[in-house]
Image 1: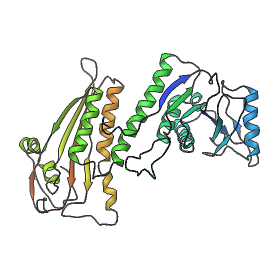
Image 2 (image 1 turned 180 degrees about the horizontal axis):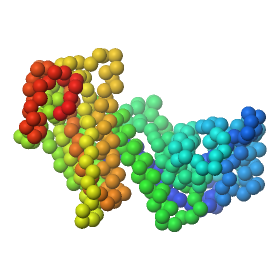
Image 3 (image 1 turned 180 degrees about the vertical axis):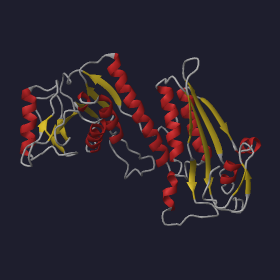
Image 4 (image 1 turned 30 degrees about the vertical axis):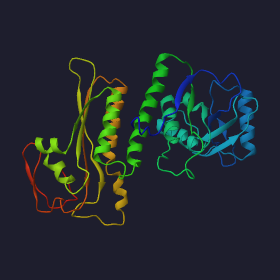
Length: 356
């Protein structure tokens, strides 16, 4: 997020071709599948990291607990012969010749969510799909506790380390894991923005956090305040923000990939930090959901930062208008005429229906 608002800290990801050499407090996550009928016990998905004795030890323990390997079923057992504190079996359902990435991502997320208080995991899910396993573990362990009281805030550090088991630890394999971690980190950044309440994430603060992320990623950053927006003719953004005491902003983040003529991608994300509807006010019943009306902006900011982290050979220009749509004596009214950027005039018929 920013130095002052670090947000969710993504676990450190490493790739290993073997289990830990010494006993550790890590939890080993292994995928299991169900048998041909309802009475069949779960069986461990084959992998090169566990020998027949270890697999047998896990399967006996699972059978004792009645684990069937159904989709998203999790069962935690002890396996004294292995150099880990415990083993968490996560069900994939019926066996398949090939596993869709989403199945592995979901299983990894399910496993991560069931391991509160665990700081380190080792997994063989990565042997099936490295990137999906890493993404799922990071996203499944996501937490947002910035506004929790000391009584209700988590006391543990959460998941801090992931060891993804893979057939090799070559640079290409490590790059795969890093790419997955970067993607999951981008999703977490967007989640942090959406989860931050509008009392703390208003246009100026949103712009500052977006700028901090952009600068850290090496992006070109441009921020227009309310005066610059009015001078440049951004009547739509100015109009939406007129009713708020917290004026609008426009942030432009640009990633310029290598190459003489890289392809250009333009992204625009809606950044309404809270949307009452303005004078055309929304019903009160579900208005609290409008704290997430800046989700498009959050996604766009996270995406362009990800493009820079991945050194993508394209040019990405993200334009993010930010405003708070509030009713007040200074708000725009139905019937007002605004001059949009580019000189087009529009009549406002409903202040809750914006295209500016």
